[in-house]
Structures are given as structure tokens and as C-alpha cells.
Image 1 (tube, rainbow, N blue to C red):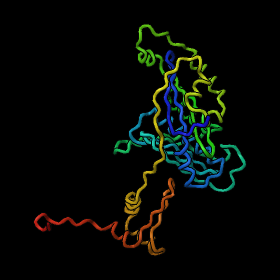
Image 2: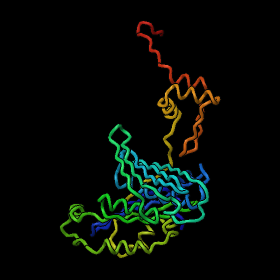
Image 3: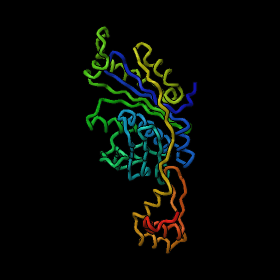
Image 4: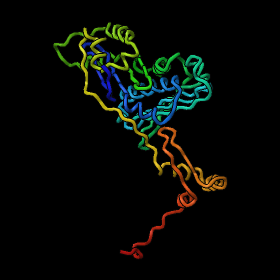
Length: 303
């Protein structure tokens, strides 16, 4: 059965300190791909990073945005995925040359993994930068999370030209689970559930992760466990670029720089790297960027 929805599902093991999430990206992922022609290897890596971004953004309960970046000096120069707290997604990549040969570490070369938490409200931005370690996107993220002393976590990711998907498991501190249950007749926590849950998840094939709905994945893996599945949350593609934000970018460059660009060409032209939207400004538009608005005194205002 093919899952054609863009959804994030959270689930909880009732009698053990383990929680999880499952995400399927269909139309939102296709919206990323239809704006650029990515090589298959790069496309799949970016899809896995996109699924991971949604999973991690959901655990952080952000009001702003989570940005994941893989930066390298090899054939793959940059992978960027942004997911907002309300599950709006966008992604882009830069590369050069042939990507048909080589492992992920070879294609990226000497590189870094960057995670940014942007509150989008003027608050303080957090950014973590570490060297890349791992042979897959999932391993890179797991190594980062283990070094940042977060909850013990495991990721399973998959992507192709039609869909991207992922599953996240996290081991919670047992006191959190005990407090969450708060039921006098509930069964005692099962200390072996984490290891068992990970072993079973390792049997999940990429095509099953891509094609099966969350309910079937959980039934296939954990039919002997007591699982609580929460209501799904929708995921959508959205790019936050705008003509006004591009104009502000040029204003930050300064009038002298803008004039020098216009001296060489007839207009200013920018393509959004995420959605490929084209923005063009002629000389009149550029002049208006730097004209201060004139506010008439109240006595001179005409009605």
C-alpha cells in the first residue's frame, strides 16, 4: 500500500521509556525536486536529510526553524534543509562534477555538519558545528546527537524520486516515563524495550519505510508492544523568500555596490536557491530601494 500523504506521526511505548516518530514526505518532497534537476545520489541524500529535519524539528517543538547543513569540499558542496515548527519544509543543494562514483564521505570530502535553531522572532540563534562522521546521513546525525549529550537516539531514513521517509526512536529518562504514566495499576517499565525496539527497527527495509503507512510500519515492527499513536501532523513545502526580502539584501550590500552591478548589466537578477523563483529589479527599482519615505506633517496632509 502506497502512502501518499505528507504526515508526521508521533508514538509512545506505553510501558517503557521510549518514544518515536514516523514521517512520510510525498508532495512536499516532489515540490522540492520539481524546482531543480538533482543527480540521483544527491537527491536521495537530500531527501534523507529532509526527513530527518522534520523528525528533529518535531522533537524540539520549535516556534522558529531548524536548519540542517552538510558542507563539504568534495563533489558535494552543500546540502541545506530547513523545517519550521509548523512543519513547513524547503531544501536545496550545490554540487559539481560527476556524482556517480564514490561513497558519501568520498563525495563530501573534508566537511562539517551544521545545525541551526533560528527562533525567527529576534531571539538568540543557536548553532552547532562538528566534523562529519558517518557513512550515511543517519549516522552523521546520530553521531552529532551522541556528542551533544542529547537523548539516546536512532534514525532510519530513505528517499527516492517520489518519496522521502524516516523513523526516529529516542530513549527517555525513566523518571519522565514514570511521571507520564501516573497510573497506579500500570505495568512496571520494561528496561529491555529500547534494545528490542532498535533491533526490530533494524529489520525495516527502505522500501517499507517509503511505501507503508505509519500504522502498518508500527504493526509490522511492534505488534507485540503496547503502542500509543498520536494524531498525525501535516507537512508542507513552503519557501519564505519574497521580493521584499531580496530588496533588503541589496540594501544591505549598499548603494555603491548596487550601482557597480548596474553599471555592468541592465538589471539586478536573483534566483532563490530553494524554490528557483526569479526576482528582477531594474534601475528605477534599485533607486527606490534607497529613497527614504517622505512623511508629510499632519497639517499638510490632504484629505
